[in-house]
Length: 298
Image 1 (cartoon, rainbow, N blue to C red):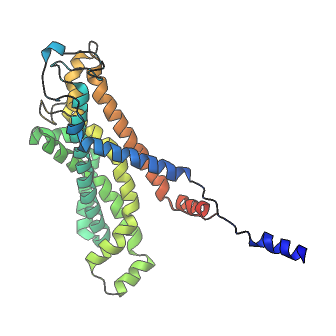
Image 2 (image 1 turned 30 degrees about the horizontal axis):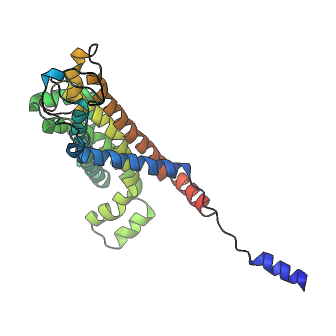
Image 3 (image 1 turned 135 degrees about the vertical axis):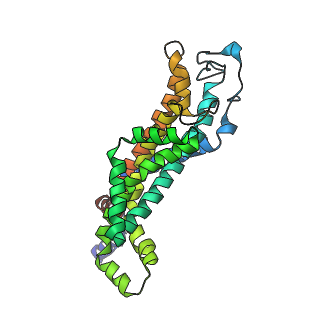
């Protein structure tokens, strides 16, 4: 009797699954937090500025970093920390707008080409090949030079040469999906072409496109800063990281903080978005997703 009770007591103890945190999931959560913090900083940059970013004071021009001015001042006595913060609004959100434009345009063109084929596919893909044949920044310089200066024209110039990458990716993914069994069933159900593309094709190709778009943010940010550095982006005295580097390059040996401050901001921002893209690619990988589910179910 006592032995039976002991066995029953041992059998009554429930098995509690242990939650094991996956390193990819932890890394993705951390990078999403840093990205959100970066976007909020850029959004509320004006409120976070310790000084007026456009107020000139020649008495403190080219002042080295100090307690009052942690990143120093520029040649006009403007606080570099405030200008870096304000410049983040233009640099980050202009880049995000640019990536959104090229992603939406390229994905739409690629899906249409992959779905319909024929003459439209041949013409649009040959146009994409033509754009890809030129070095991107050189072609963007030519387009921006024709359109003139300004951040809007710089975004348009980079958008003109940025869409073919997404068009080719979306086309190849659409070709792989359109003859699958579930698409044949969806066609037999009487779904319209628009519904097939938006409800069935797009959700299944969104993963690779999203990863490519996130990884492209860093590249587009540097190219946008490059156009501003060459005088084809924002117009002075507007703060933008590329134009700020251009303003301080002639004083690099005397006042290196004028270049290091915006350059460091570009470096940190590009690094965060690149790491986010790499981690997102690992997380969306089916094998990694299966591994995470198996570890969480143990």
